[in-house]
Length: 450
Ligand SMILES: [Zn+2]
Image (cartoon, rainbow, N blue to C red; front, side):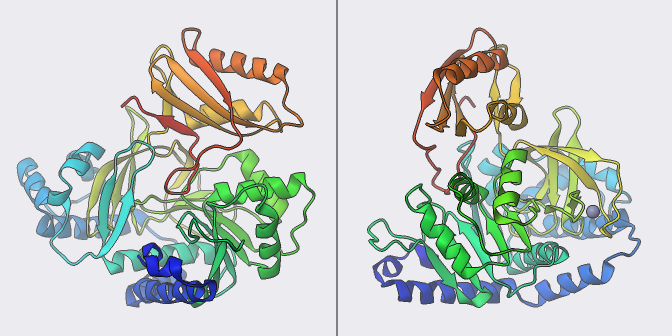
């Protein structure tokens, strides 16, 4: 990747901008080819039509299963062992294929990989320390981009409009003296903001730059946007631009954070779910409903655990068939008037293996843990839960020094011990900021027990 090269860091800023644009141009060619246009047109044509999405899924599933059998040694052997007959007659028959566990994928990834040219690498990891390297074909990426652009298009944002993107990519070298924490990618009219330098003393510069650029959408890692928004609100700094929408990616946001972003940046938030392994996209429509883009795959719910099993048609480098990705979802029976067909998901709980154990070995998921801070309005800026031992929770929090008092600390301790049980040792640590992961994300939960 161009950003990692020393040459980039040793270059003056205007060269770095040119390199960013060149790399952007390269990505553009890779991402916006014939497969992109074909899929985008398909999605636009289907809009508002009555679609039997299950029969569409079955057709795509069968062709994906045939493909995986032909090109992946792992699936060839697996399908032989279970005597799988292709094509399947119904979607229900997918359940005859065993679940692909994360650990199986990790340890046998070379067998799962297909023998075709799939040059696009994606690395995952973080929450569990399980790191995976999966590959995609260029067409896979183009289909994915088509769905993302279609999703943004339904909210009025078109390719080529001014985009402010918040990224954890190392855009800025450690030694850089000038306070310019953004780079321009001319190929798609995108100003990339590095989230790694977002701090109270730099945030006014970010806000100034945002106002000057006047983006028509904000996207990327939300924690950076949230920090900036919180600062702007607390210091009465106004944004002078009005974007069409805000599209957070990669991290979950809670209701309070969503409201904050919408208030400060004066635009609606439309969230999406995707993963670096390549799960099909689930994205919010104008009515706030989460739709599965069913052209990309199938989601099943494992009733025993509530976890989602992912079959993703656009993973031709490292095929995912009934992959237990580690997230939990609840499906909804409701329908929507927005014109999209396909299943609606009512909630996505816990990304990665984001849960902690209580003193009696119950699991607490992100949803249970975010509500705690909501009950202490405004006196805590950010928190992180760390569990390294079964009987101990370390709770990091960034207090607002003007509002936080000893009473709140006692209250916190009380609530945490009610949540985790009386035998849990609760350690509170007040910190100036929550450390970021290498990816640039800030995690709510770090659990090291498994
Ligand atoms: Zn809808």
